[in-house]
Length: 271
Image 1: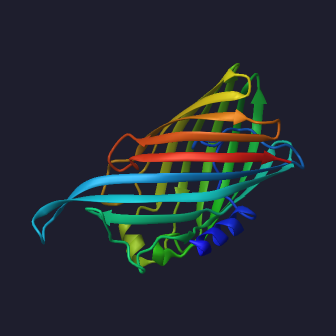
Image 2 (image 1 turned 120 degrees about the vertical axis):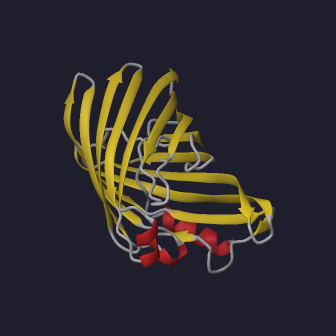
């Protein structure tokens, strides 16, 4: 436990993974402004439960997976409408069957995952409508043998739209990711090209407090499934001060491939 805390602390002071205004998964077109910095410390805790049939013992079993991710997002405004974003999440996972932990030392997914580097460029803005592009690369810093990364660099491109109609704001993301894998087993099991589509909204319900909602779907990376995971999310963002905000959210899976339940929490600092 002490080792995990020390590693997490090291991650928090240096890296992150990029999303929109946490707890939203969908990004917005907003940027920091030239010379300004934002650091977010985000966390998520997941829970998955399913029934599976054990053919060797001829009985049904309950398989549970719990896990999480702790990361920061470090964004820097290189111009008024362009940000560079650096990220590196720390992940962990535990699996149990009928209450007995089955994750052994060789299967543990506990450690630093792949680092991300993205650039967000807002190229159009007028009458509350704005468009942005966000290309990115994932650097293989995670251990692919533990399922913490791909082992090779992967690439992505996201098209982002934001429409503001006070007190509402709406965001649309359409994107594509190209995953490259080092391990032959991963190449055979996973699709390389993953599309993403999601829609989010936010509204200020009272001063300094926003309610947010999110829905989305993306292509299932598992070659064995043609059912694509879809999610729905709700949450709150509270501005403690002009430069500090905190958030919470709850994300649920809308179909079997999606994670059943995810609790999200985060804090953001602006400098």
